Amino acid sequence: MSLELTGVKEWGIKNERPIMIAGPCSVETEEQVMQTAIRLKDSNLDVLRGGIWKPRTRPNTFEGVGSIGLNWLKDAGRAIGVPVTTEVANSKHVYEALRAQIDILWIGARTTVNPFAVQEIADAVRGIDIPVLVKNPINPDLSLWMGALERLNKAGITKLGAIHRGFSTHGKSKWRNKPHWEIPIELKRQIPDLPIIVDPSHITGKRELIHPVSQKALDLDFNGLMIESHITPDKALSDAAQQITPERLIEIKIALLLRDSTTSNEAFLDQLEELRDSIDSVDDRIINILAERMQIARQIGECKKTNNITILQKSRWDEIFTKRKDSGVKVGLTEDFMKDLYMSIHKESIRQQETVMNDEEE
Ligand code: PEP
Ligand code: MN
Image 1 (cartoon, rainbow, N blue to C red):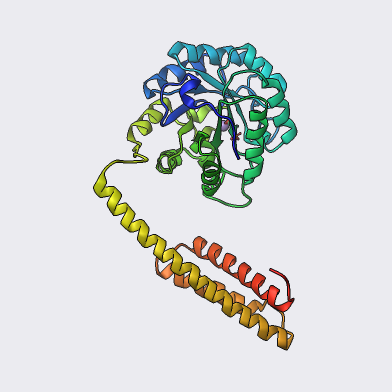
Image 2: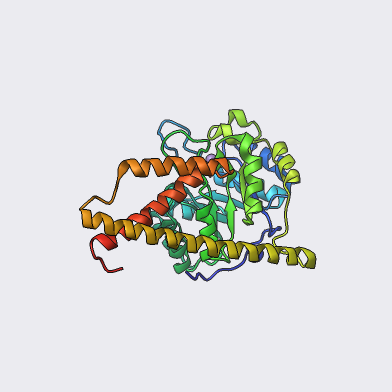
């Protein structure tokens, strides 16, 4: 997909890598947002964030201070000389944010899921040269994320970025929102010039995990971080468990290792090339072995066809699934990886047998 993009250099922010966006989940009082900004100043942040209208999962929780907070946020940003950003979810939010001279807008995860809402926002910003950051939708659907970016781009927004904040899951998980790193990585592959900011606060939901997830984001060469910070995190009116003090944020920022994405070191490049050649040849062998395995699956298909036996033999599949998982774990592969791998191999094997048994065209 090709989008017409304007690089972050022209967005009026200081650092291109990593871009640091920080500030409270919600703007609560004029004093709170000003104090947060002042205490964050030494973190050399690029953008001050603050939610004004909060999309809360349940009613009867704090839903944001509303428009009155826009000027508090703007004044706090101006006091430390950085642009400010807030979430907009409809055209009224856009008009009010623009009127208050908010510098950057973001679209929240619960809005990205809804093409009508995204279109309404795109129409409201049409013809205005303002950066817009689009959070991923709450469900792991890359097309929906890209669709939102396309709608904004079609409305003339070229200062576009994405925010990876993880995806909702059902059941118990270490994460508040599961990262599914493969999805933002694929977004980067499809739109290489699109800046992608990682939001470890909403991915983890816990302040202890902000540091490791931030480091992972930088190691995966994403372009920046959006971290929630509050002067008294435990008293925050929203997302208390994941917010950190400005001082803790500065500590994390200093501890983060910023690795180079490229180098001109010849010795390293030679060594890397050699190792990549080895990977290429192992991959060739993997593919040939898979083809061999599928060929045997087709022969099994022929036998089953002759004897009129069903494709799926549940006990055999159970046995393979358990044994292969255990063998993989023994050699240091994770259980999750083995599960995904064998689900995928089995799916292809069934497809191959189906084509043989039903004389289907491939
Ligand atoms: C937020 O940034 O505070 C927020 C509500 O985020 P999300 O849309 O990712 O849930
Ligand atoms: Mn939040």
